[in-house]
Image (cartoon, rainbow, N blue to C red; front, top):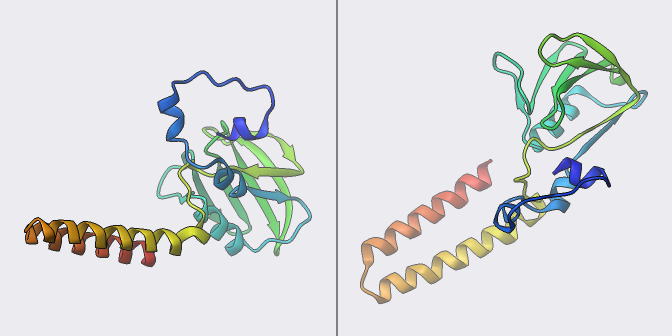
Length: 173
């Protein structure tokens, strides 16, 4: 998806059905993180942004779509690149960005700026969340009425509880 949005020399060869699952391109594009040397970013701010676009903190070994914070340094292993970016901070100023081999950590050069694409294309714009939850609740009410009308009380109760639980879990995360 990142190549489709950032390059002009891309041709897609795929079945139509495989393209339907790509998610909303605007959500994907609007969720990119742009980091530039000399600018001020708190490490907590960068961490929050990475989590928002589905990056995960390293548990043991860094892999695609993960990041690692060690003191004044943040390693980001992009979901779309073969290399990792090592961000060096002086206080809250992004001092420089190194490109390193993701396996050997061998130094490959520096960059003035970097675009971090989301770890997954399955992103939802959080501003739509209340509308989506309202639609889920409305749909639940319709299905419950259908089950009750058909005398299927167990199914009505089951779908009601399940959807209410799902809505509660979505709100909490």
